[in-house]
Length: 172
Length: 307
Image (cartoon, rainbow over all chains, first blue to last red; front, side, top):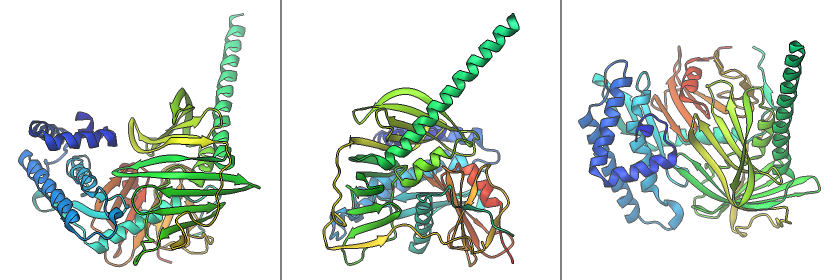
């Protein structure tokens, strides 16, 4: 747990931790306390989120994830593979978005990408440093998701190219 | 007499170091030629953030040419066929096929092995003994960046052939991305017949853009880059791509109103940062396999170019 709060946990450890957090209320409390302490210690200015706010966000995100999972299960799905196992991936990413925020809060707004298995970006939550230093979670609309997806894909494809003999220096 | 002894010990140490460096280079070259020239068939997994892919690969080397087929086993049936540098992606036909998709090949790409061999100026390579991957004996190779402004790798190479069996993209001890063969057969004849194993009712598209030279002037300038990163040829004035041979990042600029909010995020080892453009309307986005601190310094140094 402390490794995760410090940003040192592996993805597999994060997944395991999130599963346990979801099932054990006591563990969740401990985790929130860990995060709160970490924020207080690492914060150079004011602490962005209080303990109760962390918990409220956790509940809100869990609810949203469950609602999305229920929505997916109920929606017409002509091809079964179109949205496999989305719920867990979204849960992992969104919870990470909230709690990892403390690491980047110094000057940045914070966001996280939640992707489904089809590599599409299904939901994005962005936390902005807004009024009274309160992070604001909001969902990007479809156009913004599409734009971010284009950037990620374009970058990915560039990295697959043979590059070492194709570097250039522009003449200004 | 003592001075002569010291010189002797020093000479032995230098010879040992030179021999070690040669051994590392040998393994890198062996890996490069194995990925290209070995026939192999197997299944690998690739994990990046919450993304987890399982892919079957078949690779054939014949008459100096490479043929490769990658079929993803989860989700939408999709197959990537490569003949040397020509890469075609096939989809099962559907009313609205999605071509704007990622191809999560991880380090299992034509670029990875060649770039690794040429990246020894920016990374330290060391051998960490033997291990066992996919029921094969493997040699473990550590790739540590000389500066903490980029990530490192751990590689497991097949001891018999040098083929890459597993790799991890790491930041300190944290694994950001994982590529691993779960089973593999090496050295047997692989038959890659026909255009696609998905059947005839498919739609196809070329996967990678053609690089057409550096005639396009960029619409932005970057005043800070991590050491060793150089610009890659682009065909688009609104994007720049940089690499140190192994790590890479891209910069995208939009001169219209911002289409994304300012944010900092990551997906596995891929960082994304967006910022409002300095001194002009627009937005700049950095996407790449570099730490957040590095991406932040880059994005803050971007300015629009006025000719």
